[in-house]
Length: 174
Image (cartoon, rainbow, N blue to C red):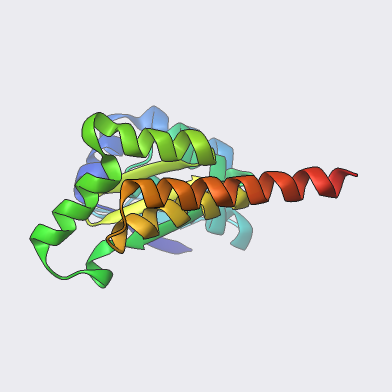
């Protein structure tokens, strides 16, 4: 039996929409119960608990339940970057998050389009769900922005990683 803490406001959404919790329970094949305002209890086999925990953690980091459920597949991975571990200054954390989102969400959308990964900026973290190559490509761009690089540099690095992955996949077929 596992316990998982997720932010109160995300748990409140789960409570308000029991069909979401039922969907996770059905997909992950584990029993999930809400214990209190921040705690979920997961009961099942070790594998079912592991998958459920990943899906619920991703949901807690701001992903829509449909995207979080991608983690139920062997092909999808989850990565969270806690910005406050890198930068302590609250103003700087806000700037970094704003730069990752971009004007009107353009930067986030572009990274998602090129890499094929899904990105969520929630609290002081940036989380990514995607296949291993997509995860690497998106993380390349995000880390460049966090380190203070320009959007152009972030895009160039991500696009180079994308070309490298695409070329490696093409050459592996032949």
